[in-house]
Length: 339
Ligand code: 5GP
Ligand code: MN
Image (cartoon, rainbow, N blue to C red):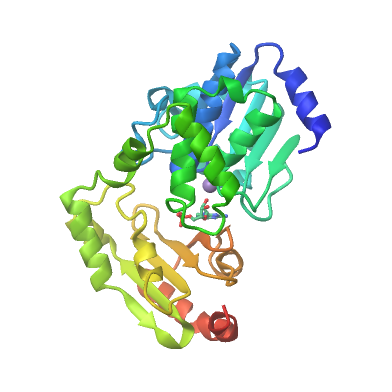
């Protein structure tokens, strides 16, 4: 985003606007933290800003300040369509292609109002008037901080904004452990703590509110873990029956794939989760080092994301999806053994 883009945006925001802010489908901590952080910031200027999420999200994210004002597109479609059609500006945050918004894809594609993208995913589509895209940055929340900084407004970052932005930085950096978590990330996190983000409470709200059912489901997932030593790969499966047995709720499988990646010597980890409601297998890919799961997910499983974390899906059943995966792996033998 150039200085002239920033100055245009500043002019644009100098009078009250109707603004819609959109995260990706199945929003995570970074998607919700960044959209709500931006929401609180824009509303300080008397803009009429609203966050519209494509669908529901897990309970462990339902405490983030502003959560109660989020409009869920899947359950309030006509109200959401009205807001979108009346918007002067649409911010799209934490995704790189409009089809990442599920049911909102059509209304957003047809909409001609000015769009501003803030995102850190690879290979972004070119739909936005102003694009702040940087794949090197830890999280969209860190980018929203930078965006506010470039508008000269870090002094406006209050406790609510700080909590929102800290949340997404925390979740997208894997609690500050991924390589994308830089000294700058830590400096921004420190600033947010100074503005009122309580790091200990935020960590607790996200990670220490497990249900007994979720722990049992994790046990099942770990029992299903398979290792393919020759490819430094490990994968987990969860069938719909297994999910049902443990009263699966949205978000319960978040982070499970990381247990596979934590095995010594493993550089590629995958979880395959059966979703009979949508008739797909939802897949999460994780890697260490140079092995790009973004490219793997794009090439074989209708997905994408980052070098070390990506998602995708399969229209085959669980058994055939695993077979397909195992058949593909030998093509990557060299890359996996040198990652
Ligand atoms: P997760 O595995 O946690 O759902 O997602 C990992 C990363 O990949 C996130 O940055 C997420 O936005 C992205 N991602 C997840 N699913 C998809 C998908 O189906 N398509 C694309 N392009 N990206 C995805
Ligand atoms: Mn993100």
